[in-house]
Amino acid sequence: MSLASELAVPPPSKIRLAGVSKKFTTNRGTVQALEDINLEIGEGEFVCFVGPSGCGKSTLLRIVAALERNFTGTAEVNGKMITEPGRDRTVMFQEHALFPWLDVLGNVLFGLKLKPDLSKKDRLEVARYYLQLVGLDGFERANIHELSGGMKQRVALARALAPNPRLLLMDEPFAALDAMTREQLYGDLQKIHAARKKTILFVTHNVREAVCLGDRVILFSPRPGRIRKKFRIELPRPREFNDVAMASLAAEITGELKTILAPAQ
Amino acid sequence: MKQFLAALAFFAVLLGAWEFAARHSGASSLLLPSPTAVWRYFFGSPSPDGGTVGGAVWDGTLGGATLVTMKRLFLGYGVGIGIGIPLGMLTARFKFLHNTVGTIALGLQTLPSVCWVPLALLWFGQTETAMLFIVVMGTVWAVILATDHGIRQIPPIYREAASTMGSKGLHLWLKVLAPASLPHIVSGAKQGWAFAWRSLMAAEIYITILSGMGIGHLLHYGRELHAMDQVVGLMFVIIVIGFLADKILFSPWERFLHRRWGLTNS
Ligand SMILES: Nc1ncnc2c1ncn2[C@@H]1O[C@H](COP(=O)(O)OP(=O)(O)O)[C@@H](O)[C@H]1O
Ligand SMILES: [Mg+2]
Image 1 (cartoon, chains in turn green, purple):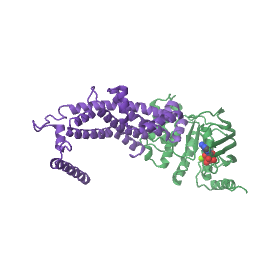
Image 2: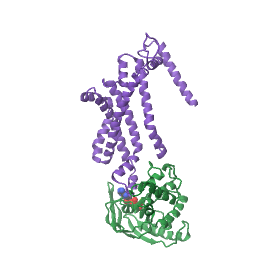
Image 3: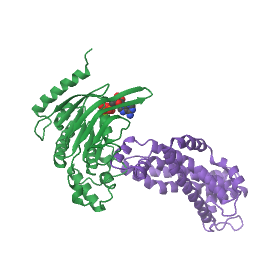
Image 4: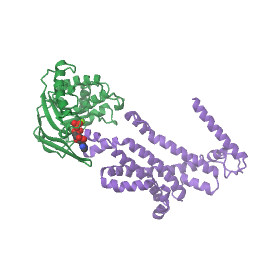
């Protein structure tokens, strides 16, 4: 595989979920985490899952990542049943999950080293490309514990992008960051989405964040986890977090969310 | 600097008091050898009639014994680590092994390694194998337990993140689980080292052997010959070796853990 083809934009993934249900059984009882989820996501779509905590957003993301097994229903990526994790679908978590025994570059190289056809030199070049894309050139040799929370998430983003996945799965990746850092990352993530054309599944409990980032916002309700409503966000990009049009859309979704949180007696 | 000088003064006074007590308390030099006598054991000199001329450092006994002891130590420790780390990984991986081998390790780890001496003598006689056996028994359990614990406490998210990047099987073990448990493995290896050193001294003191005179043997004969200057001198040597080995073997790892992970010694 050449460097050019490695850096080329791969065709983004499409996802089909039909009748997906998932139960967790623990010694404290059974939880219906997801019930009858039906959702199709098109190539290159940026889709946000929102909903109160415990409504199964992470579980659904983890099913797509194949980190969660034993569900019922059909879950397909590009027409193929999801069976095991793969680098066509990388994941970014709320906790950075970076490897502390590796430096920044080592972390970004981790997935690349699992691609045998790349030469060492090409891997380095690819890793540097992504570090630059997330705005971290010059930090290659830094240790993870020396970075700020925002920088750690940038490294995690570079690490998830480096294997050149067709689908990026993000589970509340910015939830632990301060507002300023978050807003910068919204801009950068939109740029990266435009440049790299990936399908993105993004979990958040922040409605404003979902409206700012998503082409669509999927609202979940808990116990059992179900899709309550789907919204299409037609606002032009790039979107500013403090945009007025966005605020009114967010207010509409938040209104819906409130009816979930305070169900009719 | 000031603190260093104060500490230095403390030790000087301690040494002086010891020398004074040895000379003037009337206690026999058998019970309390003076610092100068210990010094003479190492470096020799005075009195052609009173005793000691060459000194253990110059006549080669000390160097020879240290070499013999270090060989045994590194061999036993190496075997202990070589068995302990993989076994600890297996007990972390397989529930059955955790419940069986892990339980044995937990039990035997509490057994002071001198307790292996009678069995070792019975099984292997007065041989190097008996020594090796005792050192390995002293080392291996702590290493198994530390490795097992180290792997079990790895946050599942490391494994998950790695698996989404295509890591599995042996790659996952070597490139993720082993390094992720490194802090525990290092502290287990360090603990194992301390145990190995204690075990070997016990083995050498209790097992008389012809194939090489170690420091423990010198200590044993020092006692038999009532040469307490030798006994006390060797105790110093044992302390210094233990201390230096710890620094030389483990400091680089600890510095790495500190620099890369941001961990401080615990
Ligand atoms: N591994 C698990 N074991 C047991 N219950 C779980 C597990 N993971 C999630 N759950 C339960 O499933 C439900 C959905 O969880 P999750 O998908 O994490 O929700 P969200 O991400 O929307 O906050 C919750 O009630 C949670 O307690
Ligand atoms: Mg969640």
